[in-house]
Length: 392
Ligand SMILES: [Zn+2]
View (cartoon, rainbow, N blue to C red):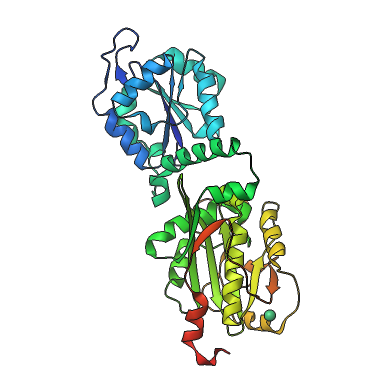
């Protein structure tokens, strides 16, 4: 049985006689082919981005797309008289997508051949196939998360944000404050877990532990009194960044054990990692607990190493870490280089999977609220103090 084909992340449309019937320069009355609006809306809702490579007059073509109510669905449209292979390549570069995740649809065999000649990884489709694209496996992701459904809006917000950053001359902190950032930390519900899963798979760069917790393991910990599964979302005045972080925390009597902290590389420049750590340290301080954090250095998570050290974590002995030996609940599944699929790895108790994980430690002290963003978060400390008078 052949493997499922690689998912398409961006579909690039030709316009004349592909998206609409006729040639715009010959007749202003071109109409979108029946059914193709539905195709565009459907692919958009699956988190597949769409763009345009058309040899046309930009103003004329864009106005026609606006009239048809379709302009908003396309990112980085390339409407000019240059080569289509250059247009498709430009779109891939702007989005930072590999060419084998790009698809191109055009009615002219010569255009498809020109694109395929320059980059054979790009998948090309004939215009007659347009209406049936949503039925193809390469356009059918198995899971569509909340963030995937609004992926295009998130990209469009980031384009506007980048443009503003480029034109902003003040110091970085001032720029961050001008964004009206709001971070929300909350206890994960059932619905959040697919987003968390996607995040821990995608963010190897900022995954402090290098240990992957599959959906099923995190789901099993949602109602566990001794564990917190927390998600972090971020918005600013340009729109949502979506789910940008996940934490897995286990409470012990004298120490809180941070078993997983991953943040999206999309928000590194906002200092999100430091804000999350400082918040957690402040919570632990108010509950009178120490903090321990798992950390397995990889060649890709150096940024997180720096964030921990900067927050004050160190490899130092403390009597509290004796409590960490008696860890309950399901263990993590180790990730090596490739993380294809999920939940298929064997589950095990802490043991061989914990190889190479260092335990960083910190005596928690009160921290200031962040100056660059507003923070909404649950009061973990109050919950712990309520739960047991025996805590202290
Ligand atoms: Zn300690």
